[in-house]
Image (cartoon, rainbow, N blue to C red; front, side, top):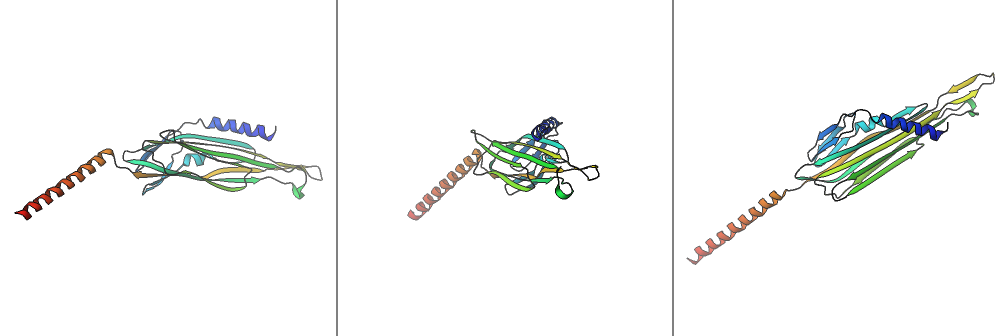
Length: 244
């Protein structure tokens, strides 16, 4: 069986495992309510200070971490919502994470025939959407990664006062085949190869600002009108006293 077929089999197993029962995450932040209905491990509020709310996607990180000497794979899919509170608006977001890959193909003594192989492949996509058909998308893919690959998806200058929706999707497949060789005395030897891939520290920071409600503007206008009327009345009284 070739590598492609093994990787596709791993993907099929991954999507089957992704149907595990969910335990929704709900986080009440200052400017919004965050809900991840597809989580099986609770996401974590890291900080909520000065209009910047950071959430660590623990469920995503836990799902997307694999290491194998054979074939393996997994997938993640979640549709998250950020219901913006009255008096606030979302002005931007920044999602950051890193792929960490390891490839350790086994090699026979002396580097002869029968070397093993190791391969990994992964992808992450994030689609954000809001009112008035606004949307933004980020994608990152790696193939045969032996090291780290950091990435950021972000958007700025937003004015979302109702709902921000984020769809986060990821998949990864790994394959490793052992090194097999025969010693001079006819003994067949075998040594495992290893392949690994993880998504490290996936975090999302959502930026919000306070927005006065229409009632606030009305009260402000009324207050300015009262101040103006009071000032004009005072000036008329001063004029009357001066003429007396």
